[in-house]
Length: 232
Ligand code: ARG
Image 1 (cartoon, rainbow, N blue to C red):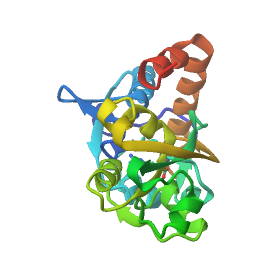
Image 2 (image 1 turned 180 degrees about the horizontal axis):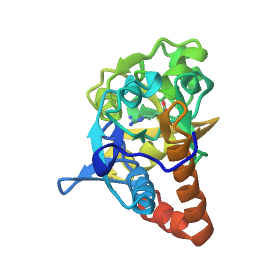
Image 3 (image 1 turned 135 degrees about the horizontal axis):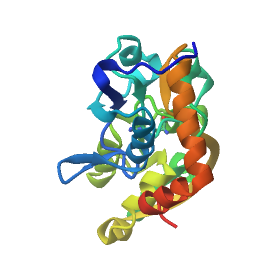
C-alpha cells in the first residue's frame, strides 16, 4: 500500500473487452474511446505508455488478469458493484450510466412489461449489469459474449429486445439504418457508476488513477473528453 505505482515492463497495461463504443473500440487500427483517453492521462502522470489487451469479460469479475499481473488495471465501461468489489478494487467513479431497453421497431416493445406480455425473447451481454437487471426482473435473457454480439443478435432476429448500457445505444442509434429498425424503449435508471479496477490492495495505482480523474475534472479535460467521445 502507498508508495509509487509499479507498472509491469514500463507500460501501463490495461485489460479491456472489445468492442465497447464509445468507451473502447478500434478505429484506424488503434483502440480509442473515452476510457482509453482517461487511462492515457494516468499513463502520462506515470510517464509511461498505455498498452491495451483485449480479454474475456468474465475476468472483470474475478480479477484474474489483475492477480496474474497480466494487466495493471481494467477499463471496460465497467460498473462498480459490491459483488465485483469482493475481487478487485475500484477507482473513484468516472461515469454515470443507466440501462436501456432496445427493441426491434416491428416488435412493438417499449418496456420490459411488453417483453413479458408478448412472450418475446430478451438478450444481454453475459456477466454484465444489464444481464443481472433482466434476471432481477424475472427474465432469463439469451446471453451474448460481447456488446457487438448483443446488437447483432437483435439485428438478426435471435432476440426481439435487449438490455444494454444506455451510452452504447445512444451512439448506435445515431446510425440512420439502426434508428429506422430499432427503438429505444425504456431508459432504466439503475443508478450505475463506472470505475476502473486494480488488483486488490494496489492502493498506489488506485490513488494515481483517482488523482488523474480528479485533476481532469478540475481542469476541464474531463468535460472536453466527455464531449469528444460521449456527446454534448
Ligand atoms: N456496465 C456494464 C457492466 O459493468 C456493461 C459493461 C460491458 N463492457 C464491455 N466492455 N463489454 O456490466
